[in-house]
Length: 402
Ligand SMILES: [Zn+2]
Image 1 (spheres, protein in one colour):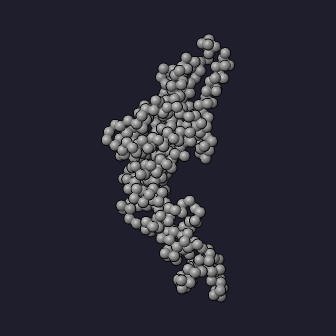
Image 2 (cartoon, rainbow, N blue to C red):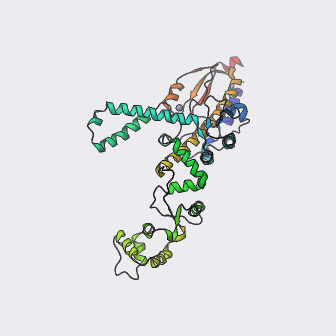
Image 3 (tube, rainbow, N blue to C red):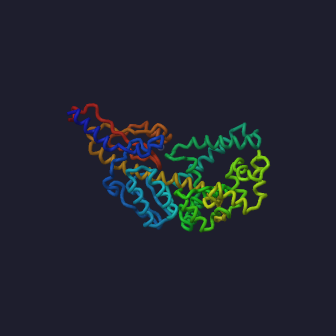
């Protein structure tokens, strides 16, 4: 009988836990301590509740979960769309849903209240620790200008490492989030199209850069649309000095071998020579080795006085936020499911323990030291982007019970 029960438990756990890893194999760490993919959710609403309106433009995605995800700054239809994305990707893991969710956040302007609060609290904590490190450091007091820059990086890294709660995210990216910059991103994503605007700001980081985007490149259509929108120059409209940067010295020597006495030995001399030649003739020669129509260069525009760097930083952090929303939402569902299933079998368990992931945060590590009474089921996730699971501990004297 004991063997049978153990067999059933093993089968149940296997059915429940198989899958996430194979879809997210590029991640070095598992998303949750317990592996859930391949397990199809039965009824999400029963376990985590339906969308709950808490205020004008404020909705809770998972009202039955103790780690709430509240979307603010958007309407019910947008929140419904976001919830659908989350439910549709249950079996695929966060990387499949991240792109779609990021696009949706960038068009609806939805922000997650709890993640915003976490970011602000963490930035404040880091600033306090940073100031403390500076004031205590004798080295800082005596440091020269350059050494101070070096020490600042060291102190900031140390301050970040001292945060107790750390969600499963690239923290240095997440903390770059600025709500006002996000609003500008949303405005321009709606004006130009999300993919177009992302392509633009990614490219415009280096305004001198010319990219060769071939006709079969899936990104090409964005470049062409951006040209029509007046955000990109194309082909012969690009200044020749920038196009020449794509060429190597030997290419220029080859281009002019019919008129050169001896080849150039320095790239800048070769460029200067090419630029001093007849423009039409240079274009003609370039056309033999380059497809000019596949060349694009961003045109600088004023984006509400926000720098391209700031826009790219907030875009990166929005991607981290998307991952955290997905991870937390999925975790809430499976926690609720795990709780419901395990409470049914409570009589064979003596207590609950925390499945702590090895590189989890200090806050969760402390939690994992506790042993939880059988009547005190620990609710996970403990925080946004937490990966801890709950493990039931089977009674030693199972045979007596059976
Ligand atoms: Zn944690």
